[in-house]
Image 1 (cartoon, rainbow, N blue to C red):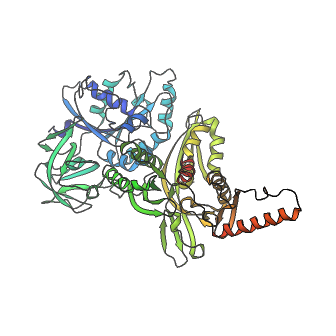
Image 2 (cartoon, rainbow, N blue to C red; image 1 turned 30 degrees about the horizontal axis):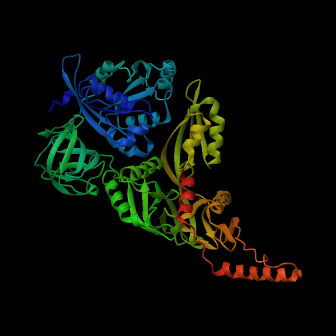
Image 3 (cartoon, rainbow, N blue to C red; image 1 turned 180 degrees about the vertical axis):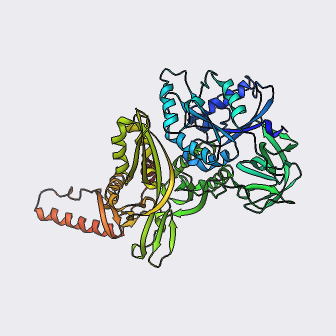
Length: 600
């Protein structure tokens, strides 16, 4: 392996669509890591969904050999990271495996909210930041604005910035030289074996493949290793590097980035952020920063055809192997039958999992309205986390309910500040601070309930700012709120699939909206059906599905009016009796229509 002083470990951080994957491609082509014949755009994004949406979902490292102007050959380890806020923990672990970061700014859009968040993450890890102003070939490029924002928002001198265009190859040589000259080599403290797991993938034939950065010591085939968080021990079957394909090597020495395959068959035994050490001479302290990944958003996933339940169960278990942040457990619903309660890191994560189920596993699924985790305190002082409205205790037993909050940063052109503030207030948020970024842009800090941004907040923000607004958020504290359980009754029977936890002030409008939608999809019966939205024992909204009427007076030709009245009264009595004993069957497609309009 290379001498540690000629190793450089770096990552690329940027807002979505600022050219991160394109720059990674260009660096590999320029250094002949891949030849032109095998090249394709977004080479490190090997999932179809990543290519289609233009986002990175899973981290992917690659080793690059570069002969610098000083005559030395450097080993550059590029660790590609996800860019979205949902995967911020994975980003932080990937950055912990680096000494430097290339920070990309789109020359036409300038610094965005996620750029700020990722730079703060990198600064907390004490990384050397190399600023790059990308896409300078665009007609709308405004380099002076980017210089100003670099200094005002990120407090980085504009002289450090490299002007580049990853698309046409401008500035690539300067970027490679900056990596070798500015990014420090790995710091080796001692010879005790320590390796950070910054990601893991599942291979059907070889089990769990751990992506690691060796901090000290070395790892080679046959070594007996121990995982610090789980305490599990195992023998190494193979170590190697990514070129970008997996390539086995004899040894991973201190400072190197690569993969380790041990006798691990279940992903639960290997956790992102954990420390691998030697079983014979284990380290006493793990590498800092490890935490268990906690889902923030929950949703029920059910098969549209009940016969597909076992297929869905198998598909979820396979998906879980390659996504350790995704959790699920079986649940049943009176309306939807057998299904699973699934936990996700955020809304994008939820969207991707559902899309992968549909595409990769060909599953027809229906997802319930997403909910967040509430802290419910009973009157005896006990706290119970609730992610499903069905499990909310009786209102008489509840002392208070706390909802999760997020701290959001929104960057936008100055003229949209008014409409953004209105949107924040409309979503029960609190604007805490506004600061001028440059003469055209402002940054707004706000505290918002997670439940309010989980559905369409980002879409609304993009709409009202004509696509120029950007948002990033991090989880905040829990706060007491007047939250209530909103239930939908159809013919006085509760339908659990439509139950939600909402703010008391929003219960009536949300209930009215649901009742109107239900009225459209519930088929008419021979008796009148009441659709009611209730909070506790109070009805907050009501719609009525009119009865199908048979013309019982058709056979009356003339005669006294009392004959017709008698027939109509008899019909009315029959309908009243039918309403008491009749059952309303809501067809499956009605649930699909309602739940799809809720989550779209």
